Length: 449
Ligand code: GLU
Image (cartoon, rainbow, N blue to C red; front, side, top):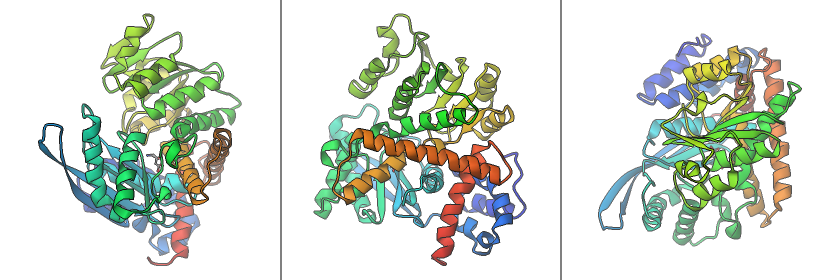
């Protein structure tokens, strides 16, 4: 890490390194937040006095457990699962579950840590947590996935509750998996506790616009950043990484704003379609057929598919990284800047490396960090919890309107906070400080717990 921390923060970071060995992603997420906090400690000495930063870097509870399950041939498999209950100062732990072979404690901790600030920034009454497993859903049948989810929940249920810990989806966990997990929770507890899970199906307590919310919110945030510079998305060329849930609905909203999407990707390669990506085709390939994005170029003769291609090498005005952590590095950032990119909105969590972020900021690009730009997903989860608590179900229009208000408010708060703390236009600083102050104040108010 090249940026020096404030001298009060340096020993706190050293302690995080020492106590969490080998957890690179967690170190990276903590360092990025601490880089912003120097001016906060100077202005509010009570945070240092109450050791709020040390406390915020230590999860309240970490659960690690074995998940045994049987595949379709009768062979036994053992996976490891996690739930890191990071901070409950503002509400029940809230954050998704990720199923991906790369999952280990360091990834879940980085995600849980980010979630604390993101959820605070959303203005909703939710704390932060995250979970997941190193289970790889790729190539698994639906019954294997169901058995895995049931086995995982047979342990996890005891830690959950609508007032305690409320999971949702993330990479590898969509509505189907949420259904299997919620079903097993209901069976074990004998309670129809809708508010214990979000991202549910519309027939069984889900919220309209939840599926769209993360991608839509990211684009609303980007449009707000552009508006602050007297610009808009209209007529802009966009490149989106990924082609999962976040990417698909980021593309949809960007198109509604008059942008043209010219490329998207998956972990195998990149699709470039200069005519503008056909979103109905992407939805069919990804949401209905669950196939690779390469199929797109088989069906659209004017599109190109580049196996192992680099999506950030495609010239664009706006880049939306919507795939996974550290997918956009310094070299990619430099290329994007050189080719005229003016705005970046992170739909994924921590997709840009610290070097990449610095290159964007030095170039004066509008850069929206994930914990602000992609907060629309979890904010709409909080709206789902609200509907569940009142046994209500809102229209798509009403829910989307609420999402839009929330995103505009997050943007305004980041913008004003960055200004107030001497870093005008720096949304990373604005998001970190605004999120931190809200959680920190609640922690001070609740005493040493
Ligand atoms: N996994 C999503 C995120 O990174 C959503 C979490 C939720 O809805 O609880 O924010």
